[in-house]
Length: 270
Image 1: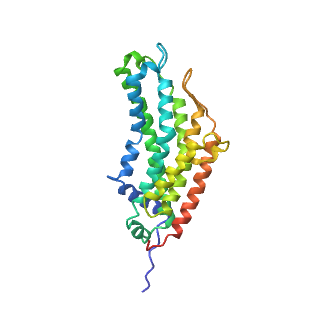
Image 2: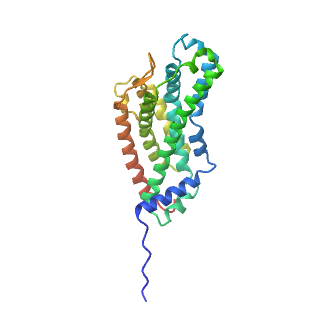
Image 3: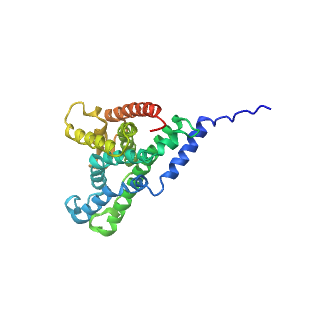
């Protein structure tokens, strides 16, 4: 009697199972807490600034929301957001660096499913963090209307469309960093290496902001898109993609390709 070997699950099934397993691994990890709470810091900083010094930023009788949202977005985008993506990428990949790769790569799933699962996880966590940031930002503004009624938050409103546009621009601007850092994290065997590369990239981007080709630097993209936002006379954001976003998408594609090749070459015994 002949017995047929069991057929391997189709690629989508493998990806789904791997994604579920990776999601379960996130419980009680620093990566999950970073994604859920990372957006709170810039919101808290801006809340305190407007609570104690709001009268210096808001002219009497004017709508405080545009200035408030614009300042908070600048605080988040220049340094905190790039550092968040660097930390998130390193933490997610580092979950496997203590023997996890050896166990993971011998499982009956393709390396493409393993790679795609962690990539989707990073993209999802990045999106969740930025959406939570916007929700916290709006909630903190409403709280200021109660704590500092003299600023006038409770008497004015802000259009959601430009905020959603900036959210989309910001997400695209972070993809270049995410793709590069994902590949870098796969190239190293620990957390310190990717963190060092990320910090070096952020510092270099801030140093080269006046360079004519700065749009090509992925770590500068979250800062570069701030030029698409205007806070006066009302909050607005351009709809078209900026050059920095297109370069960010290109870096993302390059990073994904490099990361996939690195994972294909990783030995099972590593």
